[in-house]
Every structure is written in structure tokens, then in C-alpha cells.
Length: 272
Ligand SMILES: Nc1ncnc2c1ncn2[C@@H]1O[C@H](COP(=O)(O)OP(=O)(O)OP(=O)(O)O)[C@@H](O)[C@H]1O
View 1: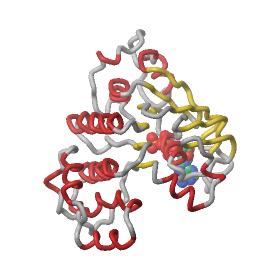
View 2: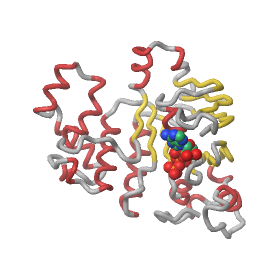
View 3: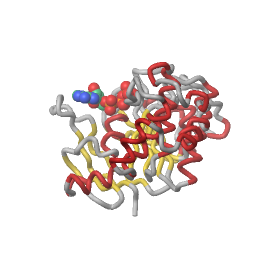
View 4: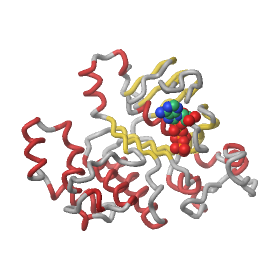
């Protein structure tokens, strides 16, 4: 049973219905797969992640998550299905006045009774679990800080710590490195991959850093103008493909050989 199966999918934003944000998308993703979404700004990466997290209803085509058409379900059943998916947006919507511990533990809200959730607002239910999740992103010392005292990168990692506490089987991560330095970028991708592997969850991560995408992810899905430009194992991705993908956006890549992913030196912020 694939985690996702998309056939000929079109997605439109309500505010721009005449220009589809995604068109003719065909994608099948198996449990435990780890893939990177790449492509220039406006290519449709965020829209695809939002569609996979059931935030956007496709306009055309077929879409299943865990072998189920979510949009054929009632609201309550779709909500239960959503609990198996976790979207970490680029800017996590964390309440500014909340303590980090409370914000991180909010990932467990769907599993808790209303009473337990309410009590946890005043006395965090499991601070040890929150601390462990934060520590994996080098953020254990911020457990009791207020969210609005965190830097952009700390806030981003706080959002990812939530992901570690959610029970989701599909981890959807939108540009997790935009506010991180090179060492933290490596740590973040390694942690996400280890977590996905440990729970056999599917990991789908959009990245602007092509080199990091190639060095960390076995499958690369490239989007441009709302369409899939290529969907390949990283060993088959060539610099020419990357240059064509970013044509008009980025300087062309020089080398002519396919990437040897293991030889690629990670470089943050360095889109090819
Ligand atoms: N809320 C919205 N309303 C209307 N159009 C939107 C909306 N959000 C995105 N779009 C459009 O949909 C297309 C895809 O945008 P999307 O944000 O998915 O791209 P992206 O690849 O994630 O870009 P970036 O790398 O800059 O984050 C773009 O043409 C964008 O202008």
C-alpha cells in the first residue's frame, strides 16, 4: 500500500483559479521512502506538500493517502487520516507567548483528551519528551524559553522537534534549512532521516539546497512551473538536468557527469 498515489493531479489556489499551481502530477511514494523536492521558487513545492498534508483539495485527478481518497471521507474520518501526516511548514505557526516546552508538546494534542490537553497548557505533561526532541536539534537549553525569544533558526528547529513527537507516518517538511547554518543543516537532515527510518515513515522534504538534497536523499523529484520535470534516483540526476531545472533562475552547472552523490560536498545556500 503506497503512502501516496497521485494520478494526473491538478491543484489550484482559490485566489488564482485560472493558473494551476500543480498540473499533471503523477507520483507514487512507498512507506519508508525518503525523497527531496527541488525546483525554483514558485515551482509548486509548498503547494505539493500542502496537498499531501490534505490542506489543499485537488481540482482534478486522483489522490490517495494510505490507500484512501481523503476527499471522499467525512470531516471526522479525514481528521483521523490527517493525524497520520505531519507538515512542518517553513515558518512554524507557534504561539509567540508560549513556552517552547508547551509548543513542542502540542504535537501530541491529537492523541490527548481535551482535559489532558488543557492541563498541559499550565503544567506540561511530558517535559522530558520535549527536551529529548529539542536536544536532537541542539536546542535542549531552550526548553523553558518563550517562543518569541527564539531566533528564526531556533523557531524552525522547534517546529521540527514537534515533528519528532507526532505519531505521523508521513513526514512532510518544507524548506527546513532556510534559517540554519551549515552544521545545523547537516544535523537537521540527518535527524529527520534517522527519525523517518526508525519509524518506517515516509519523508518528503523540499529543499533549495540542491547539493544537500543529492547528498541526503535517494530520490529526487524536481518541479518547475507546477509540473514534474524529473523524478529519479539521485545517481541519475545530471548537472545538465539541474541547470535546465533552474534555467533563468540560477547560474548553469558546469560538470557534465552524473552526480556521484557521495562525492558531493554539502554546501548550504548553494543552489546549482
Ligand atoms: N495562496 C496562494 N494564492 C494564489 N497563488 C498561490 C498561493 N500560494 C502559492 N501560489 C502560487 O502557486 C505557485 C506555486 O507556489 P509554491 O509556493 O507552491 O512554490 P514553491 O516551489 O514552494 O516556491 P518557493 O520555493 O518560493 O517557496 C506559484 O505560482 C505561486 O505564485
